[in-house]
Every structure is written in structure tokens, then in C-alpha cells.
Length: 326
Image (cartoon, rainbow, N blue to C red; front, side, top):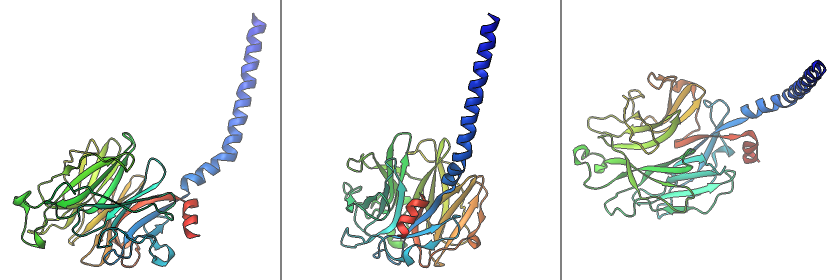
């Protein structure tokens, strides 16, 4: 019995040494590669210039602060939809299928939004119009659509701003042509079938330019308060337990004494950055926070491409970026 115990001990010792050597070898050879891979990514900013007829533009950054035009600011995709031929507010995300999915404003007055997908940001699918508000004859527009992927439900949530004539008269102002927006949404898993359009966010004021991002067990919606009288024109944040709401706990303005719109969010570890278009000043701005309550203006830290307008931030690998440069 004692011999068997000693034999077992020796076998365990041999196995332990073997596994330890294998593990050590693995870490020695592959950990540097894994570390490089984890750091091997590039931030990309999709945006438009001027009125949006020029199409999709891309910029890149290694640190998320200093941005540079890709291909000297040339357009990557020309708009083909609607008589207006616009590609404003391009929002791009990487979906659960690994592809890049983009939505955009295709018209000032039509009730559809633009959609296209790409495996590499170079070769794009056919552009299609998703008729998200065609069922509503009093809808005046479908502006600034964005898209968020919910990994838990494996569905894409597409949302946008629309004014429906006659709704919410208590917040309608005569200024700015009487636009009085709320945020609406639809969902899809394949971009072929879409759920019935529903109201997503009614904060009690004119609201546009929503973007939704996950934060642990909750979802954050960053929006523009579009109130003109008395003027707000600033960026606020609301939260919800589910991606489709209800969104509550609306914050005070996180931006300064200027007009801001088109927010997009970049998260670096425990730091939150919100970029936005200071359209009256014809420049871009940014604020930073570590707790989503106290915000610091870091506009002085950023460098943006000339004439950049409302877009979105996402990440790609270094290999994908190299392919774009080629």
C-alpha cells in the first residue's frame, strides 16, 4: 500500500512538472502575441462634410484624441438613395456577424433611412432604404439614425429622430419650422425583417441625435436637447435597464455654454469621452468623465479633420486598418 502511495505521488509530481513546463512555454511564446493583439487596434471615426452629398468619410486615431483623415479626406462611399442623394450622420458599428453595418440620413423630408453593410469598410453592399416611418403620413422626417447591437438578444436596435405633425404641442415652438422631435426605433436580426416602429424616448422636450451604449447592466442614451425657447441645444444622458427602455434619470447638460449636437461615445477603460459637433462654432468638442456625473471639457486635447460633421466612433484591428490604407 505504501509503494502505491509513493508511486502515485511521483506520477503527480511528473504531471505537475509537465503541465508547468507546457504552461510556461505557452505563456513565453504566446503571451506577447496576445498582448500585442489586445493592443493592436485602431479607432475609426465615420463622418460627413458640408451638406452630406459627398458621402462617407473616415478618420483614424491611435489614442482616440488625435484624429487624421484617411485617404486625404476622400469619400469612401457615394450616396445613391432618395432624390436628395444625401449621406448625413453616418453611424457604423461592428455587428454580431463580424460585418460593419451603417445607417444614415438619406433625405431632409423622406420617411426612410439608408442602410449598407461591409466586411472591410472598402467593399459595400447595395444601399437600401429602410421605410421606418412610411406608415406614418404625418411624419416630417427621419433624421440622424443610429444602430446598436445587443449581444444578449442578438438583435440590432435602429433608432432615429422624427417630428410627427400635431404630436406633443406643449413642446412645439414656432422657431425652426416647428420641428418637435422624439426618438423612435425598430429592431432586426437580419436587416430583412424589422419589428414595428415604436416610440423609444419621450423626455418631455424636443430631442434629437440619440446614441446608445452599454454600461455593465444598464444602457446609456446620450442625446441632444433641441429646445429652442428658452434655448438648451446641449447634450444630456439618460439610462435604462433594457436597451429598449424606458430611459429615465435624465442628467443636466454635460456640455458648456455653446450649442452642441451629434454626440458619439468612446470608452477607454474607466474613462468616458463624448465627442460632439459644436456646429455654430464650426468645430468639434469633447468632454470626459470617469463617473458619468462630473464632466471635464477636453476640447483642447483633441485634433479633428477639417470640416468634420456628425458621425460615430468604433474600433478595428491593425490588419483591417492596413488593408484600408492599401
